[in-house]
Length: 91
Image (cartoon, rainbow, N blue to C red; front, side):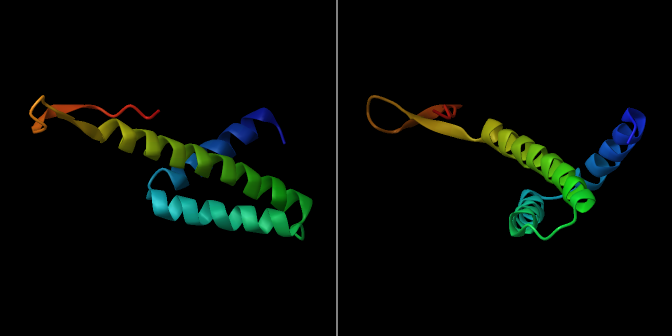
């Protein structure tokens, strides 16, 4: 497949996936992993669903990053009472 064709297909996949919730995208990604692990999918189909799986993973990662950016940690004052919030440190 030529590079322009791959770009068009990639953009089409991204457009299809962009509206999915995290849960729906994860469910589709899990099905793709199951299908590929079974090993009975023809080569061309394997490549096609692998590419979709890559796009689903990127979408899930972006949604998780967005959620992490919104979550804040409650900061306690010296008296042990909430004194405000600060960005959540993931590690």
